[in-house]
Amino acid sequence: MAVRHIYKVIFLNQGKIYEVYARKVSQEGFWGFIEIEQLVFGERSRVVVDPSEEKLKDEFSGVKRTYIPMHAVVRIDEVAHEGTAKIIALEGGSNVTPFPLPVYPPGSGAHKK
Image 1 (tube, rainbow, N blue to C red):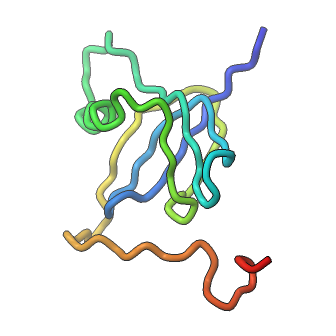
Image 2 (cartoon, rainbow, N blue to C red):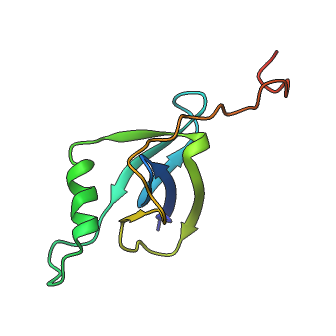
C-alpha cells in the first residue's frame, strides 16, 4: 500500500497568511520558488462551511500547480491528515503590499557562482 503524504504549507500572500494542504511539494520547477501540486480541500458533504476555505477553493480552482516564492514561505510540515485550509489576516494589517525582498541579501555571495 502506497504512503500518501499530506503537507501543510503556510505562506504570506498580499499581507495575509495562507494555510493550504497539498499532496506534493517540491523545489524542482523554478529557482527560488516552491512548487505545490494536488491541493487538498475538505469534503463538500460537510454541513458547516468555512468561508475562508471556500475563498481558497475559488482562488485555486482550475490550478494544476502553483509556485510560491521561497521568501514568502513561513513553514512546510508533513502531517498525518489534512485540516481546514484558511486565510488569516495579519494583526495591524494595512492596504499596503510590502515590497518583495531578495532571497539572498546583497553582498552575501550566495547568488554568485
